[in-house]
Image (cartoon, rainbow, N blue to C red; front, top):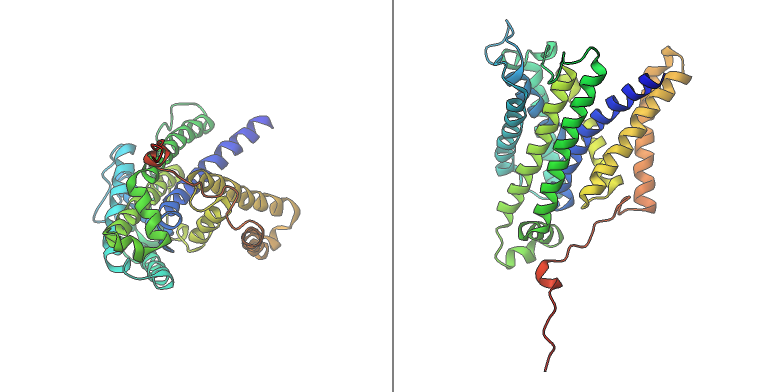
Length: 323
């Protein structure tokens, strides 16, 4: 019993890490820069398929891929692929504002899923890509220890991204991002290249989403277009809003909290409802998350952890008294 609970906890935390990384990437884009990116799942999918192509086996019905390279190459390739895709998308869409940007990025995410579904020579279409290698597989007699080591890798990557983002948002570059978010016209009047900073934030955040996709693909060992539906973007946005937009630690906390509600509600439904009612009851999970979002917006719109006021080092220095 205890072993089963521990295995479930590890499995739960591994999946929570995927959402936490996407929430961190979205926080840089939306929380600090004000970019309403509704295409999170698209860059997540790009990272997953890039890692599958780089690390996966050769398939008889594909024309490209099957390189069978080590896991770190898959992670690097996923971040690079998602970043390059974000660079192209950003050049086209980032001059748009608010709802127009949201519509365009949502369309990009749908287009990416359709490419994954129909470009069978590369992605195998609805058949998916299977036998993706997982690091540490086979080192121990049971998969439980493999999952623990995979969780350690995920936590190490989350810590690295978190620390890097904390340094970035406290730097002059991060202060420009917040200035653009708060008043884009004023930032431009001060001589800042608003489009360049928005594009940089978009690319970096999307690369982290691609990293999360690579971790997901190699952990699952199988991916298909059905894994990358728009509901994923909705979940990540709820995680960031609940945790606290503009707060990196809040983004991580929100990812853990909302994923706990999402997964636990499924366990409760499976225990209480008959199998014939599970399909209809699945919609109740979305209603539950929507209710949590509505309550947070009503009673604590700043999230569990509000955005911290960051003071520059120069502003903390004592000033000479006036004569």
